Amino acid sequence: SALLKVMSDAARKAARGLNRDFGELTELQVSRKGAADYVSAADIKAEQVIFEALTKARPGYGFLGEERGMVEGSDKTHTWIVDPIDGTTNFLHAIPHFAINIALEREGAIVAAVTYNPITNDLFWAEKGKGTYVNDKRLRVAARKHLDESLLATGIPYLGHGQHGRFLKELHQISQRVSGVRRMGSAALDLAWVAAGRYDGYWERDLKPWDIAAGLLLVTEAGGKVTDADGGQDMLKTGTIVAANLDLHPQLIEKLQAAQ
Ligand code: IPD
Ligand code: CA
Ligand code: CA
Ligand code: CA
Image 1 (cartoon, protein in one colour):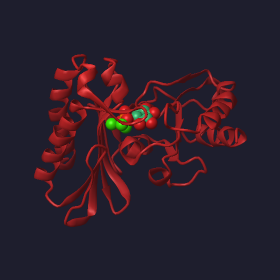
Image 2 (spheres, helix red, strand yellow):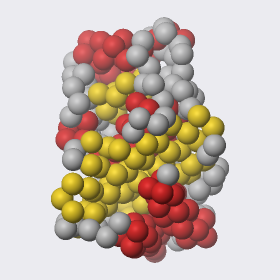
Image 3 (tube, helix red, strand yellow):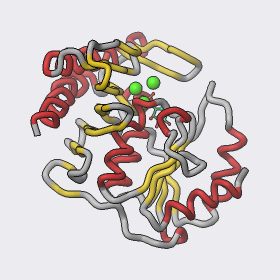
């Protein structure tokens, strides 16, 4: 659709700068926003490119970006939610696993999503009611029904995050029941990979709207279920997310609750 073209063009345009800077940044070009929350010139440039492309194509829409915060628009029903690099730590360490994340919110619901890994050239996209794709290929969540055969992804809290104890309890509970747990370092790609059936499920806490807004639509449009840790729909507010297929999702929630 025209909307998806606007979003994917913006992501590909920002990607050109990221591809140039990948593996080339020195520590001098990186600064800290919080204890372990890094930002580079590349994050800021990419967000600027995306902001310009989106506001040119859809003047008036609001814009919420990790690096510039909220920019109100005249149109109060639409807001872009953007993370210019999800997986900044990977990007800064020259690890080729990060993504440009763009979602469109309409009256509280995410209606379109793009998650683009410029290194692998995987462009994950979804539109509400129309399914999820990577490039031209339709995606479905994995069909595995039993936790003991599943591969999950998660995020580990790091310096400045807090809640390390609770995470270890959850990991202790869950890792005994599954065939593997991965921590690759990009919430956006974790969700895209659940949509693609590469992971069977994913959980993480303390995320921001720009980390997960696109991915929650990717997973639901691929036939999966996404909730917060209580099974509710407040993921964008609480920053807690549990995603899996319909069989595994309740099992994952149960194990997380057993860990408290
Ligand atoms: C981070 C990544 C990571 C998650 C962190 C996020 P950033 O986003 O999504 O996987 O564990 O909590 O902050 O900072 O690289 O955009
Ligand atoms: Ca960040
Ligand atoms: Ca992020
Ligand atoms: Ca980021």
